[in-house]
Image (cartoon, rainbow, N blue to C red; front, side):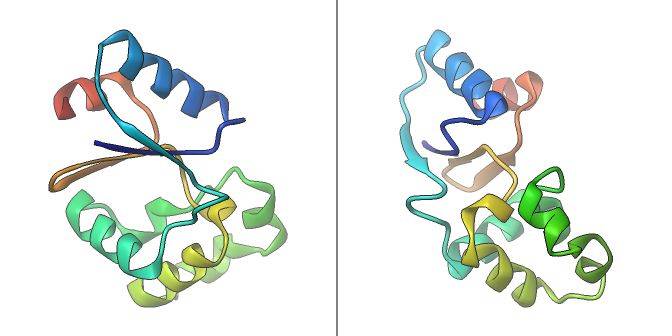
Length: 115
């Protein structure tokens, strides 16, 4: 299982603690140091079944500075993946990848279902 996080993010810390408390083995990856590629993002979008815009960290400073709220709705899936791959801080986190399933953000019930 792959756990992609921003270590200073409180939600990521909660998710990591949940995995550790439940003895779930995972590899972690810092989303800033090793940002997701466009290809990974496109694959995860497909696997998650979510709209591509759901992969944006809408609470983030960069998202707001770039005024993406109005721009995202007119972007293609490929354009969204390209933009997200340019900076890990644009991507909603944490991301948990297990085989052919992906969960973004952290909700305990979603994690329980995945593991």
